[in-house]
Amino acid sequence: MKKTIILSAAMAFATFGAFAQQANSSAAQQPHQVRAQGTVEERAKSQADKINSTVQLSADQYTKVLDLTKNFIGQKDAVRSSGAQGDDMKTKFKAIREQEEAQLKAILTADQFAKLQAARKDHEGHRPE
Image 1 (cartoon, helix red, strand yellow):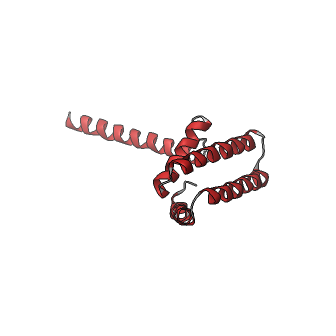
Image 2 (cartoon, rainbow, N blue to C red; image 1 turned 90 degrees about the vertical axis):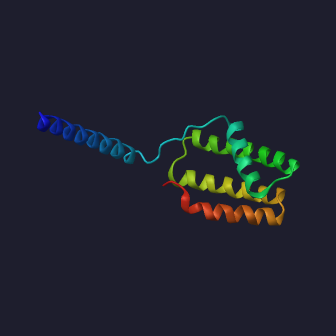
Image 3 (tube, one colour; image 1 turned 90 degrees about the horizontal axis):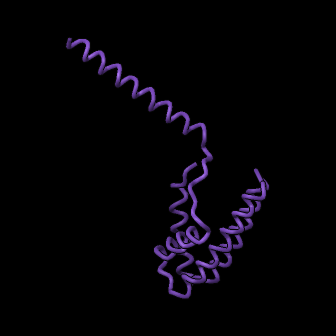
């Protein structure tokens, strides 16, 4: 009786392990999953809040950064929906990021911009691949 219970438990654990491995392998096969996204306004507010928590924006700066992020999120969404792929998409996104950085630099003080750049550089190694 004990042998049957032990054998059943061992088989159950082996089965759970097999299912866990299948789940992990299917996730590995789909590296470019689309994140659940909110509206443009929600995503812009989230980005503006992250910038605010990093560099402590004034109320006026926060409003300008929020408008800026809404604009550029809209541009990025337009590129995604245009069907651009590969190098074409990378080139378009790079141009958008450069414009966004230039306008963000005009809104922030030199110290705030340097602090934001440092925070982004620290975060680079933590991005999912």
